[in-house]
Length: 246
Image (cartoon, rainbow, N blue to C red; front, top):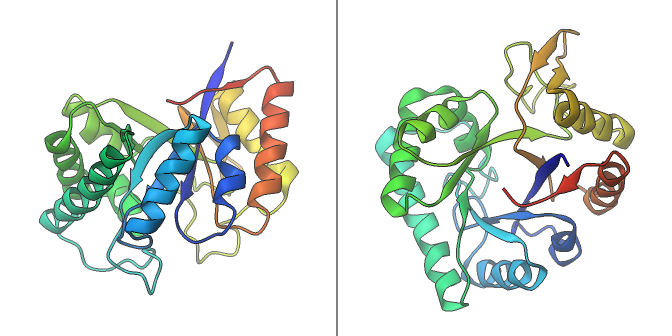
């Protein structure tokens, strides 16, 4: 049976994390950079553990004003420090709760930089390997972060997005563009099913792009996130696709 991991960014203050948790298989927990603090991290860890969901760290730029999405100056050394501090803290807190962190997925601008900037990707992958080489690294399908992780012997998860559009080069359409987000639930579900079943996604210019999907991101901060998660789970099941943590 075909399987896919469903991951979601949580601990960012959306207010429905407890309801979303049973519908996903991997939780990316904000760990103090763009969002979150020790209290929210502990709460997210406990929710994930109770639901049997794989726990991941979701480090971002120290940019709460911009929710970690502004393209601020960043050196490879600074990127490595962000990973070391934020992932290290989530691992420490998880240990106190008798849980373990299984993966790392950068957030926002840090994620996008790591997808295209080789030096940043190398710095992040090296920092993750130094923390624990057993950690999996989540990155954009076809991006530099996956290459950097593989080069260091890390398990890497090729990530695709349900509600984002793609440019012809395989990158995500920038959020500032009018066509960056897919707001129609049926269209978003259809995109996921086609990626998982056929390994293809249609770009904004109409061309077809080959993509590898190990994990699908469900954005947890939207007003319809919960309804969409229910619909996606139902439609995946109807198509004979099982959900399983990476």
